[in-house]
Length: 188
Image (tube, helix red, strand yellow):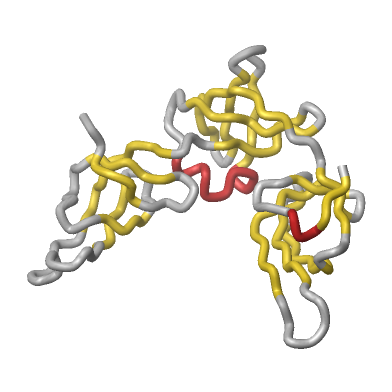
């Protein structure tokens, strides 16, 4: 299906130069002279190579149909992550490059949604929030608690996150998987 370049969004899959690309980031640029254009960072699904391309906002691109399949994360073997389709029980693997930062949020048995193009899994969609334990948290600086300030913390998966001053090491928190931000203290 043809769409205008300015309607592309991160996560979309497009066909460009006879290759399939996942859109990673988009930036609309409006120079002082001339028409606006869109700067798109994308990753080739087959090779994993990244590319930055520019389109005029009125250009059209071919958007590919992506189907979602309910799946479950099983295990990691080296840099390969194994998943299972919960309807057909077929297993498939995605590499660490395919998953990028999503890999750090995977937990055994986690329900995910696998994005497929022409039946081939190319990416996963994580749940909106995951619960993780804070393993390291900086001490609160005296006088810093009056304002809504955050301090750095490290989660059990190694991801750094900004947490409120009252959260200490050993506390389980809920983290937003799209941007890696603190949501709330986990309810045990």
